[in-house]
Amino acid sequence: MAPAQPFTPPVQRTGRPPDPAPPPRGRLLAVVLTVQFMVALDVSVVNVALPDIRADLGFTGDNLTWVINAYALAFGGLMMLGGRLGDLAGRRRTLLAGLVVFGLASLAGGLTQSPGWLITARAVQGAGAAALAPVALALLTTGFPRGPALSRALGLWGATAAVGGAVGVLAGGLLTEAFGWRAVMLVNVPIVAFALGAGLRLASEPRAGGAARRPDLAGALFVTAGAAALVLGVVRTGEVGWASPATALTLAAAAVLLAAFVAVELRVREPLLRMRLLAVRPVLGANLFMMLLFSGQFAAFFFTSLYLHRVLGYGPTAAGVAFLPFCVGIVLGSAIATRAVAPLGLRLPLVLGGLVGAAGFAWFGLAFAANGGFWTAIPGPSLVAATGIGMCVVPLGTAATSGVEPGEAGMASGLINTSRQVGGSIGLAVLDTLAATVMGGHGGASTAAAADGYGAALGAAGALLAVAAAVALALIPGRRPAS
Image (cartoon, rainbow, N blue to C red; front, side):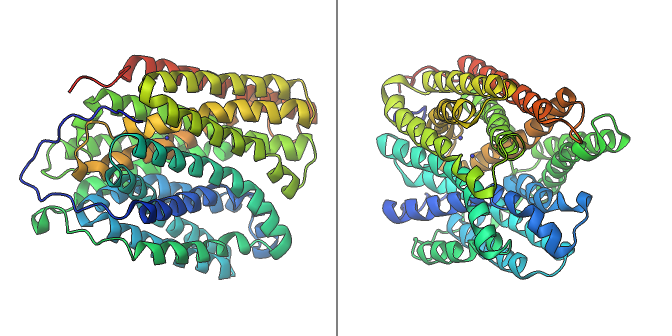
């Protein structure tokens, strides 16, 4: 769930008021890591509870997927707006508002008695998360000085995101079996309460640039609608197929809306996204790499879960425990990268991490296709793939904000988080289509055919990570330029 001496040209002063003094770093880190863990947890914690949700609330098969899709649509569609609001209204204010929205939506979802209200609560949760994720990263990159302190903080941030997603699978099974499905929604309430208590103690920020700096409402409308249409068109391909008129129309609408967003951003004074950011090679490279990386990570969680349940016959709790090697690998890879970026720069850890992750996914593919057992198919590939992913997190977090003014850190953070969510959703949909093709369709496939399909999808995910390594080689500078 992406360094010690990053590329940081001197900040050009533009007449804007200086950023406020950073808050105490220990308290700031606690808030950011809590938020990151909660957002990552909610991406996966609900999945395991879906059968119980269907039985209790009376969902139909088609409507049940919207418990997941509603969150993904709001999360992916609103992150650019959330990041920019942090720049303009103050990151502390935006963080606290996002926590309140997320907490109230979690409470409402846990108490709901109808499918429609649960789907609505999940959408509002996604909106809250869209404010939290980019603002948390922006607080980190502006609150820690460039160098070892920021490298360590980014390592913890990345490890927390990935471990939160893996822990979500385990926690979803344990909570559902012990307390029922409502616990996977209500578990967020005490986490939000802790984060709010700590967040309220952070120093207040002045509004960036005063009243003259207005949010780019037209840009926000176009990018939100465009990103939501893109995610919607992709996630529904599992129901209607890639060749259906509905898919074609939705993706065409997404293209038109995103083109309109670009046109607006080139004209307004205070854009949601300054297009010149994409001309900064590390920023462009980091976003392309992030899209490919999370296509692989989303696929790892999804297809490994299916393999454990369908091929090996594991229950929710046992399947969650099986993800522990993945958690260990993420922590290991993040620790390696934290120490490596100072002497090696950003490019080499990204290239090595991408190749190690690709090797892990290729191992997954071969082991699944051979219909192996737990010991041959899960621990080794999980450890290798997760170590590679963990190695990429620290340099990605730094590259994504390299050369960006402090007042636009939320903009850059919103962009990299959008790349993560949208890239992961698109990649998973494409790989799911590949798996279904190999299986001859999801419905009624034999255990052996399912293993072949899941293996093919994860092998293709490995190829995506190899492409990501090539992107890093082409776009990420090898070392810090002389100042």
